[in-house]
Image 1 (cartoon, rainbow, N blue to C red):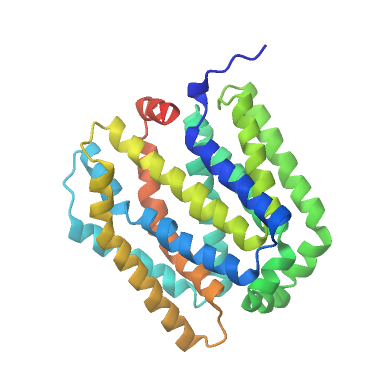
Image 2 (cartoon, helix red, strand yellow):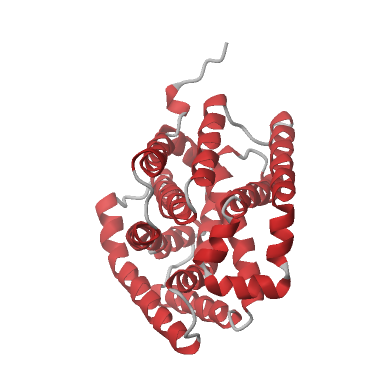
Length: 322
């Protein structure tokens, strides 16, 4: 008989999964959400939740510096942050290089955010993060392959030129099945070696997550995973990080301090979009959003990676109790 305390459940995840189920029910049982409405939902939630969650980076970096007993300089932080943004922006002069790096960064970042709480063996965390992130990204992309080409016309040119689409379309099921098997074997093996720790209800939650992002149409699937699941869990982890570090930061203080950086980020997005329109007139809004998010990922991943490295058992306890 399995005896699992309700305190072990992630209440935030349960709430988000309920939202995902509602989205599925509306799309399949009430009305098929038109593409333009999907686009509006995506943009609103990315701007309201997705981008602002990255605006907390300076507070996280300040806490990281405090734990390292080093002085924090907001000027130094902004200078380094902007340099990383600029450097990665230049990489988009070579689209496949930038896009490939963005995929690698996203794979690791998704794994670190979602799996950090269950990893017990730090020596195996990188492999676990990569396998998990690869599985999530594969589900998001390979179950919506035809939608990606239709929704991002500019990607069709890049994909067709490299013959990637033909290969993926022909071997879609084989690739997704192989990655799924790799993920299951890795999780089972690491569980047997006691490198990770999870329970039955967490497995059910994860299965629900996969069902939701695979059955929702592309834009809603991306909206649910990035703007809701990933962003909200990241904010939850940041709050737990500060709480475990005995920080006196509160929710209102967080919001107040992040407003300026949120506005700067949103302003930068608008600026980058018009710059892309000037240099690449054929670019559409979604591809521009992809480029902007990829540029923001590198410095954000760096700050969050240091935070997760500073995560201790006390922090994990706070997250489990939240």
